[in-house]
Length: 209
Image (tube, rainbow, N blue to C red; front, side, top):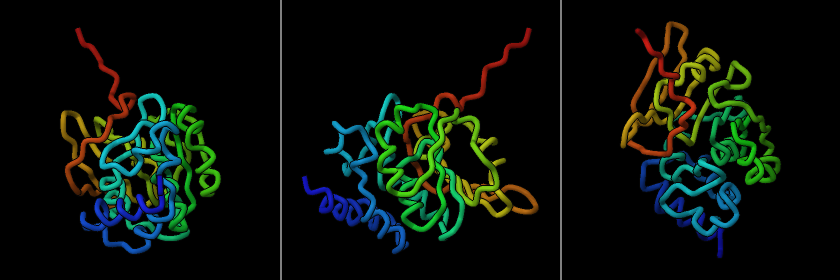
């Protein structure tokens, strides 16, 4: 399979046509080998308009959705970024000149993607998705959805930092952008999306007598 040709088709038919106009982002998407961020036996599906298995329950976010999330973040060279459950997004941000950490709860994800992340210059850390590693990030992004507002992720942002994630508590979700301002937190809805949900992000049920 000609993966370079498939990447161009992906950018032309899934990215540009969905108002992802940032040329630096487009160039990064054309350069990053998406097929290396999914299970080896699913590489043939890396450029399809669907989620693709990585390892366990983790999935590669559809190109349309991850590219729109990344454009909403307005990434700038030299910024610090944390990609939680988002190895492909991490590599794209690194290609755009950011300093990136990729965090996964399941080390099997890095068994599948670790070599490509290392080549991209992305640092990796294994820790629960509920516990972002580090603080003072300019950007945080996830390729998976959360069932509730990820307050711990928001707390890891610096003032002026941005978080892009899909919030999904039912069949459909909404991509949102949070900005940590000096005077408080702002939230803006971006587009409809339904990626797989990080179940461990759900609050622990409490019972009252």
